[in-house]
Image 1: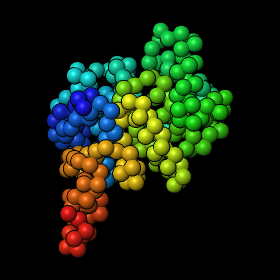
Image 2 (image 1 turned 30 degrees about the vertical axis):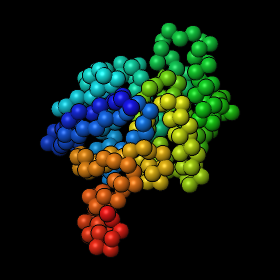
Image 3 (image 1 turned 90 degrees about the vertical axis):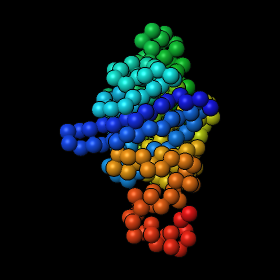
Image 4 (image 1 turned 180 degrees about the vertical axis):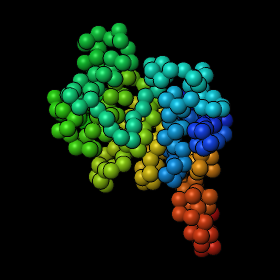
Length: 252
């Protein structure tokens, strides 16, 4: 598989703080990549760089063979990069369908009303909220609002979808349904980067995982492999725990 996205030696500095340091990885077309790490590791900052909400202090990002570093965020979105956010913020006075329509119209201002309606219905059906198209966001559960966020992103017809903690705050059954949704979206050919703290989700849906700690990449490989890496165990649980696991033969 060819690389759809390339993150090439990207660095981000906020004043005296180095939030991202010399991070590189590729994402193949059709791949689901998990981006994981402890709180404050730089995961969301890296998504912000890819979606051009944050300008890197060094390095570059390439999408489909073209350098997109420094482009306007709306230009990146219209090139085919869509994302969700940790804190779901739908337009409160618009219905579910109208919220999704915003994504459909933003992607292509020249779309006909019929094409927008079709894109909205398709996105809502895909995430399972078509039955609540006339509801206001305040009438939805947290899980449904998360799905609304995904639907709005899907309505832009992206080639790359960035999911930022879409399972945060959900219960076990809701997480299972989101896992199924991500798999279904990927089967339709969409490339996905998943930022998530739910390790079950990472191992269940991701083909590969990249691990960040203090803004640096410390591991890159299959989920099972990186989650058994002593450096990763140490990053999440501390050096003492990692040493004990190695001594017991639990970490290869």
